[in-house]
Amino acid sequence: MAERLTRGQLGLACGITAGAGFVDGVGFIHLGGYFVSFMSGNSTRAAADLASGDLLGWARALGLVLAFVFGVVLASVVSHRGEARLRVTARRSSLSCEPCGLPLRC
Image (tube, rainbow, N blue to C red):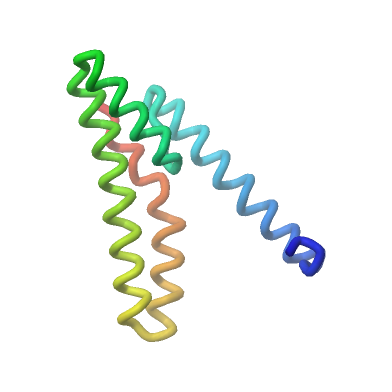
């Protein structure tokens, strides 16, 4: 698929990927080892925290997973119900809400 991309499209894809990686890295540091967009990592972390008896850590990881799932469901509902302008809004919201897990730090 990458062979069919123009230079501009490839540059945009690289820029978005780098931005998402940066946000995830900052979120990982800020949250003390929890991920902003890596939900399988958060579910693994939740299981490890629960197994070690760290209920606060388990709740943080589980909260991030639940917030991610809620965001996906909300964006899906808005994009399927709405008009074209709402679809654009949902896409923008999903990009801007990615770091919303940052305030969950206790």
